[in-house]
Length: 196
Image (tube, rainbow, N blue to C red; front, top):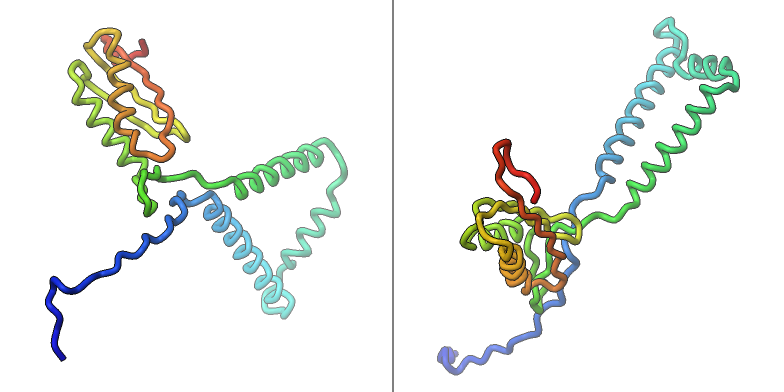
């Protein structure tokens, strides 16, 4: 068999894969799962203890009997009502936290293949761009939800905020859903940075 020459080989370009879902940070469900696992382990230890007591290997009251005796001795009162309301509030809060959607960790770039950039990386790039502006001496960029918060100290005039906004928006122009900019100029005082 003869090999065709490299220039005669035609590669068919396929269509790119559809973009995948945007990466999300892990939810609070992991902490609740660990807490639930610890509760189940504790219940398992109590069950083993009750089984050992039931077999007569140790001479102690069973844990479930102690709990039943305690609950039978409880009478309705203000403390019981307060504890019940607190338990309802904590349980409802845990359900809300467990079902709350997880936040996004990236921003999607304008590309046909679903390219994303980490939020912290984008913040560092905006920081470098803003630090290159003459008159800016310090900057900190933090992503907050759908907002990009830019704090800076400057020796420039009142138009520096507009220049910072234009520079940051030029960096964010490549994003599918750019975050809103919140620019907060600070002034350097004797006791540190203060809001202007």
